[in-house]
Length: 622
Image (cartoon, rainbow, N blue to C red):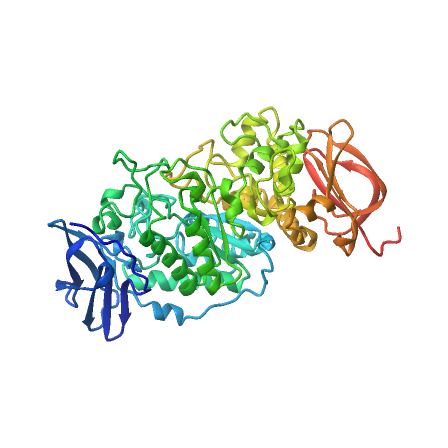
């Protein structure tokens, strides 16, 4: 049978709930017959034959109130009957056994709370990555709703030592965005007893339905949506925007997915020899370039922005997705929210899609409003992620200060590498994320001859270097206090090892205070937010070495930085205190002891593995 895969352009796919009826719309061009199996009031299921329309769509309207009722479809493909969930379904039952009917209008009618902190540029963002369960599971605090959406936003929570925990801790840090590891439905934990399993969520079941193990009442499909919307609103109320980590590039095993069951071999990439493309290394590649696969991704993004008011997306292995889909999705999302953020992992994965079409860093110029995780920044500042013994700048490696300047300038200048990005907002600067070893575990190996205190000082130094580089600073949960995963590099399915340690926060609260200070200073030193274009960055900021390759500094002496007359940032990555002498008196605020009181100096000592901002104001008489 010749199958017509003509795209369906309307936005009504899925189960469209109304109090007196629900309309079910399914794209199934390979099917000769579609039967809706719908749960009734007594818990039994009744079957209804759907009516075929143009463009491969089947539709049926069922009278009655079917909120929270389960459903699936039995489709006949090539003479064979197979039962599948709805890939456009917005709700799901416990452990994703069925799709479920949910009321989208109720969620939209909950309203949106707008943060008072205005985003004038992506460079205003300070991103903090966390996993809902990992952030709230540890019991060294008084969070009551652990592991759940609403546990993330409980106000006035404290650690055992009385320090802020949960939502109040996020506010204290001074971050502007939380990036949530996957919240769309995935395989792994049991919805009723999540302690039976654990997974980060990079094995998606749905691009629309929310994960049940994060819900207080996962047995009620509508509750997941209500709780998630409440969580987003509470974060917005506290001036924290929400970025979702989305996995549109692959599935764990394609044969058992609703996509493959419904439209065989359409939604996935296959090699010329008939084998499926598996470039992610952890599943089968989603064929984003096909019209209805592209539509599904765009529909998902529009739905999440329009209904839940989320503020951005981090695309897992974005290089597997085609760049046209990313650009079109951004265009649609911006119609709903102008300051939406798009960024992702731009690794050039060997998927069966021509390189020129991939949403990889190599094609960054084709996606000018999209950001990319800057692995060059990571490796120059921290050292190789894949060689724990390799030393980067923060470990005291001064061999390539030109590379340090390159990445601190957003990787937009042609020295010593060819520029990676056309503007600084495309550079997501980071040294740690959920993947691989934590920064602490890396430094324990790279700087094995140093004390824990010196390693923790180097982590402060790394946070400073990330915060005060051009581009968008990104931090992983617990990085600010030097958390460890006890040497484990791949912890995607290991219970508790990824948890935020609130006990460790009590022990190292000074490190959290230091992070709060540098986040505050980044916002106050607004020139870091103004400069995005390579010419502005190149003409205004100069790096130089002081002494025998001991101090790396960049100085500014331009009128564009008003109200500052001069600003110097000193970096001492060595393990020794170093003296410096200035060309006049400069004010500074101590990063070592979190002192915000300006002091004026002309010379002094910068401690080992430390950074320091010094500045002159336009009206200084000194």
